[in-house]
Structures are given as C-alpha cells and as structure tokens.
Image (cartoon, rainbow, N blue to C red; front, side, top):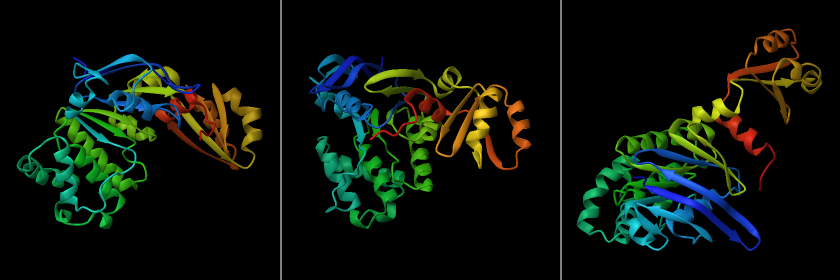
Length: 303
C-alpha cells in the first residue's frame, strides 16, 4: 500500500490556480522527488499532503488516513524538514530535540533514549550542550534533519534540504539520507539541485504552473526527453558559429548567456568541426536531469 496517495489535487488563491489537478503515489522505502521552477507549486503540494493547507478539490490519503480530516493522526508517523531552519535559538542542541519530541506526546525518558543516536547521526555528539547560535549553517541543517527523526517517522518530507550549504555539507546530508533509505524510510523530496535529485531519487515528477508535466526515474526522464550527448560551446564568435554550423551538426542548439548548448545523438561531426576552431572552447558530456528540466520548463528566469 502506498504511504501517500493524492488524486486530482487543486488549490487556488483568488484567481491564481497554484495546483491544477496533481496525482501522486509514494511507495514505501523510496525517495520520490518533486521538481519545478520557483512558483511551480512544490511547497503548496507538500502543505496539502501534510494537511497544513486544505485543497479546493481532490483527495489525499496518508497511511490509509484521509487528509486533512485525519492529518494530525497521520503526522505522528511523519517527519518534516522545511526550507528554512526553525530551530529554537534560545535552546541548546539537546533541548531542541527534547522539546520537539514532546510535541509528539513522547515521554522524556523515550526522547532521552533516542537523543544519543540522533546526535551521532547529525555528527553533533560533542555539541549537545551548545546554543544553536554557535552552530554553522551545515550543523543547523543536520540538526533540523535529526530533529525530524525524533518520532522515528516512516515518511519524511524534505523541502529543499540542502539549499545554502557548501559542497561538503551537501554530500554529508546526502549520505545521511541514503542511510535513512537503507533503513526502509520513505522520503518525499523537493529540490532545485538536479544532481541531488539524480543521486537520491528513485522516481521524480516535474511540475510547472501547478501541473505535472513529466514523471519517471531519472534515467527514464533523460532517455525520453533529451538527446544523449551534450556539447557546451563558448568563446569569441560562438553565436556566429552556432548560426552557421551548430544547427546542422546537431539535432538542437540552445543559447544561454555566452554558452551554446548542442544536443546530439552522434557528436563526432560536431567535435571534428570544433577541433578546427581554436577560438572556441567546449565541454562534451552526457545529458543529465538538468537538461531535461530546462527543456521542459524553459530557460527563462522565474521569480
């Protein structure tokens, strides 16, 4: 049975339809990713699924319980990591875990029993008595994740969990998330980092303007929506070269800033041409999830 099922979800604010008929199914033990540009409806979808916002229409079931009617009961089996750290700055690391556990009706003895393992999970064993204000951004993010596990949840909602972190902190968070998946936890992830989604997610859905526009595993999405090879070309005269040669040497060319992206199934003719042009620089790589995302949602900036 699915941990979370949503059917025909719709939500509007005034005349603006934020969610326009989304369907979701989360399988136990998987990491499911929800991708989309700013304003696509990702956070609203999470809030609907958690019962924090009422849908205008559609149905949601979490662990077989109807949401939002039984959302409070369903959330006892859920952990949430929001976009912004909401740790209590007046408490120590340990006190943040203790107080949060009480929200779930857990006894202090049970919370104290779980705290050592959670501190180890977050790599904060030596910082248990430290005030939150003394922690780095990466430490706060790890503590927020550990706090979301205080009730030993079956389903964990992660809303852009690594935004603002340096590469080392991001990789550590990824390692911790893989540990949770190995324990059989289910993860619902929203992210703007395509490499993060590609590394962690078993299945993905891409939404734009409140509608689901593609879904499948990262590998399936790449195979279905993009040519397998990409050559990024930049340098003096790149636009003139693209107009004269790029389109004929590849299936598709797109210009963003000072870079021309050439997509092809066979890049050898393109590479032979570029090798004769010392004024141009280039990078050859396999297509990835970011290429799919940009093709489906566009390259224009969203605010």
